[in-house]
Length: 148
Image 1: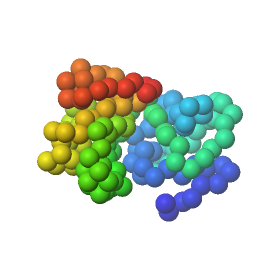
Image 2: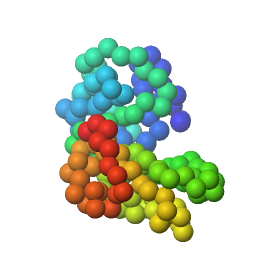
Image 3: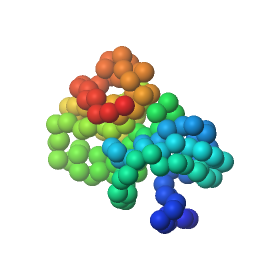
Image 4: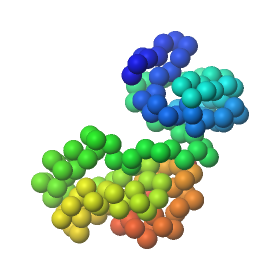
């Protein structure tokens, strides 16, 4: 982070987020924090907080109606798959925030030759995943609707 956040500003690790927002957009942090964007530019957003909540590190940020251009598996996830999941012959891997079948194909590519024996559970947690439900079901071994 170039900015750590304070009592008045929240820092997020996804630098492209402000550019995806528009005034009037709803933003959810965790399960209870609802904010409405009042102004934004490519590197910041101003929001009105609509609900009381306690803010913690690493909380999920959900922006209904916005497709987020992030790899479904971050570097740490890929490292965990290669160095723990595959060597330990894990039966299932749950892939969070799946938006389309391509996310699961990417996850299978990280599994390499173990892709045939390790099953993928697609966790659908956003509107994009709900919109692409049929293609996700066709590619997944199991599906979980977490929120969205």
